[in-house]
Each structure stands twice: as structure tokens, then as C-alpha cells.
Image (tube, rainbow, N blue to C red; front, side, top):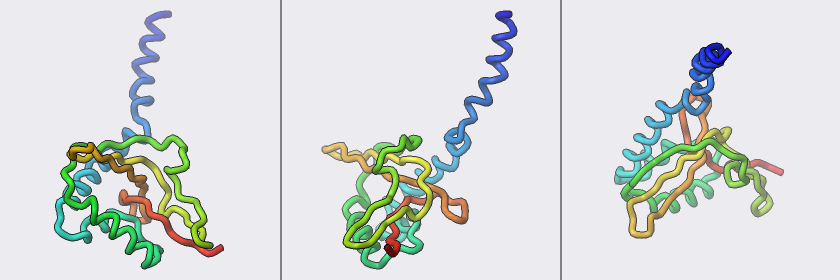
Length: 145
């Protein structure tokens, strides 16, 4: 009986280890490398290419550009990904100044970027796949009420 359990465990292990996260690990690592390269760029263009911007209002895009200008070029210590756990900050669904906002794409994972700074600054990004099946950073898109 014990040998049957062992065989079952050996056969089941590959199925359990092939989680959704495991399947995407290689493409997520490539996205992290793209993020690192964009971070060292001298313009925001490369970094903005990593964001799902379709449908974003120009005012909101300007705010995003300003925020990015403070982080661009900061030395990166590490980047890792985590599954979403359902906390409110992982999704975009809010009302601001009479506008409803939603996620530009469906959130799939968290990307945590630790910077090599005195303060050990860390940024958290929610990412998902766009219509072209490319990983992108989720943005807030205004919709009408």
C-alpha cells in the first residue's frame, strides 16, 4: 500500500508543480528584464511601453509620467512576482471626481521591485496580459458613470 502512495505522489507532483504561476515564470522573467532595461533608459518612452495605456485620459497619463520620472533610473536590487491574494490595492475599481475607474487589463500578478537605495525603496505593480498576450502594467482607465 505504501508503494502505491509513493507512485501516486510521484505522478501527482508534476501536475501540482505546473501551476499557472510556474507556466508563466519564463515570460515574467523576460518582462522583469524589459523593466530593468526601461528603467535605465534616458526617456520615459521605454517604460511607458510596459504599461497598458489604451483608453487612458491624457490628464491621467501626465500624472503617470510625473510619477515615473521620480523612479526612472533608480538602481534596481531585485524584481520578483507574486500571485494576487485579493487585497483591494490589487484591483482598480474606484470613483474619483465623478469618474469611475477600472483596470486597463485584467490583473494577474504582483511585481515587486526593490531598489538599491539607502531607504530600501520598494514599488509594487499589478500586471496582466493585454489583447496581444503581452505582459503589461495595469493602469486606471476612466469610464463614464
